[in-house]
Image (cartoon, rainbow, N blue to C red; front, side):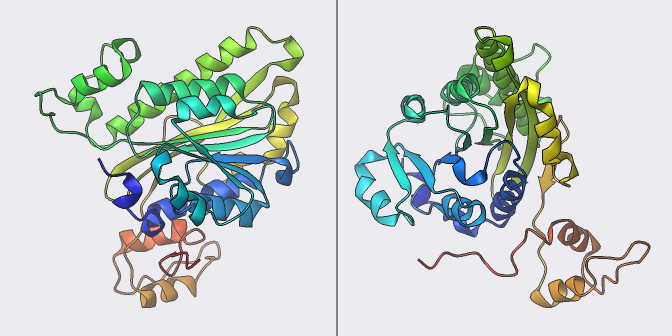
Length: 316
């Protein structure tokens, strides 16, 4: 099967672009360490879109990109936008153990496939090893599936991929349709984070134990339904530092089951200009929508700070 970067140009997905900008806005609020002292770990593909944004927005220079397609290594090295990016070739389950998580880390495990056992293993590795002030973000494909070539329906496929022990008895096909699979994946992923952290805390001194708070629960569809979840680890005795970050003031912050669904509106440049001339909207003022669909206009108002008025294509 061809690598996903041969099939999709990840720079041209509008909802994904919004998600990147929102994540960076949240990362900028980190109060636990100087931002430039963080390291970033991601799955950069050949485009390195998140690496460019992380470096330019946050000033982080120490970065690691994990790439399983080592046979294309020369192409990845050639496309690296910054010398501070170190390529780590191999499967994530192998290379994550080589990361020094004692350094404060922002890690985005941005998969193009579903939540499977190997992804669970990666999540547990990070949650077990994370240090104070580190952030874990996970993205998986949560698009509902048809029966496979063996006739197995979606529920049977998920049982095979995750194991029966991770699937509540009440789970049925109806609950997994639409955005149900995305909701299910977040629940499973969050449970694994908390369980791995609990295991790690069990062998730590009380003063060294960490807490975890979920910050992100994104859902979006740029051709396939995707789910992103994650949050921050911090010393249990330093909750005041977490409170100082004021993540709860971010309009997209989600600390529970309710998702923030990113819906990129389809508006013309003239319609966008008409709306932006009125923003930010003074309290008590009604917006003039003109002839455009109000649902798209409302979505634009919600996201306008994160949406480009152009297609974001890297030229170099």
